[in-house]
Length: 111
Image (cartoon, rainbow, N blue to C red):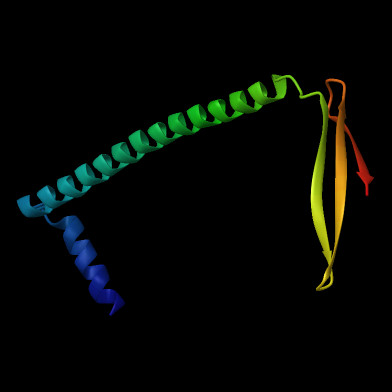
């Protein structure tokens, strides 16, 4: 079996007639389709990289803008009702105070 393929290959090498027109056209078509797919892949990846960079810049700018904003100063009281079991409830409040321009917060629980 191996000798049959070897003989066919050797005959093809020594054959003077060359490739047929149909074989040449199919090879050219395959090469053209490969080049077209490669070019399409390159343009798509370039477009996606540009969009990704634009989105990341927008994201980082929004984080930067948020961190530059003035922090709220003052205090607030939050009232809530805590249910204990099925029937009893307890009214509690929480006071929240901010200090300075950093992110320091004091929370006081009172009843």
